[in-house]
Image 1 (tube, rainbow over the protein chains, first blue to last red):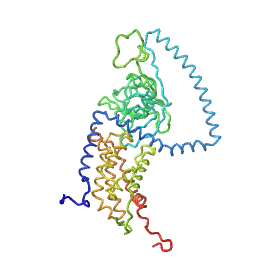
Image 2 (tube, rainbow over the protein chains, first blue to last red):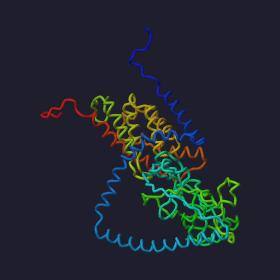
Image 3 (cartoon, chains in turn blue, orange):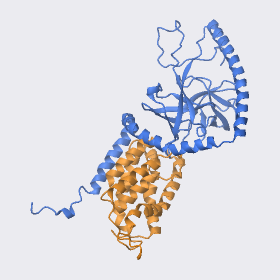
Image 4 (cartoon, rainbow over the protein chains, first blue to last red):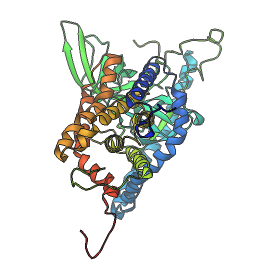
Length: 304
Length: 174
């Protein structure tokens, strides 16, 4: 014991050793999370502690928007009220007609023995914040698996599809936006029913419409609706609008760029669409054979 | 510890002040400013500052744990912030004797590469794993520059409790 170092020089484990251990753990976590994606239970547990803190830090921005609402002048409120009222009358008129058309459509489909149109449930969600991330554009919402959301549930607002749940916690979820890398939505062109897939090209880039020959009938300004062939997105929601077309005749390919219709930064409220194409699959026709993929044809047989 | 800028001997640091400042910096990171490239990472400024000035209290392991929290908050791959925070905190500890002796302007130039490494690390990891360079992610160089420019402010705020004079004599301030 006489030769032990005096306490003055005892500095514990050297920083380099700590660094090596930390870097090893860090890189192991990265590889496991990237390859296996099985670490979400850690995030779920930690989010029980983090979400209250994050909600506290939302308070200043809530206060700011509350103040903005509070000090809105009376005349602008009256104007907004008037326009909302006219809009509501228009919409209720349309809704009556839509209900009539839906019944008529359902009857015709029954007559023709086509599969029924699909239904979906909606869960109102609130967008809490966009986490800082230079790679991807995501938002965190305040509803999770306890409220019926599933991994992959689409999130939409009044304008159209915003994105999809990519990480599900018990009381919150992370939503990846349309422009995220490798984000694909099956769509059809509203004007002529042409089918394609819109693929995200990463943050800051336009969406791309892929797998289309050069002679496809597309124009700038065409609106793309979700086609519902994948069983994830309910059909008929606006997704994107075509903004640029580059036709390349030599390779028989066209580069079509589009931008999302629904903008996330302006709306704090959104809807989660809980949709399962198997819910109201027609009994009798293929009840014995469970369809494994969940894909189905939603359009009449006569059309291409 | 000597404050090289003023030449005075600093008062001893309170460990509670260090940990409170780290938690406050973490909470500042939770403010919902949106996903913009220019928003500084308050936490890494604070961690690097205490690494340089008080590496006995805030070391590599503290940086690693705070990095894990930031990973979960930002929804990035688990371990990205933990890796980069612990790496730069080692760099800061290795450079601390040099950086504290420099003038303010030179300190800014010296901490800039540290912040740049943290800001660009998610882009580098994405490049390594997916073989895709995210050009948009390179805008986080702006973040590193802003963080480096905030360094004098951080020095003034975080060293303020230690710079107070010990015996205050109202009649003879010096």
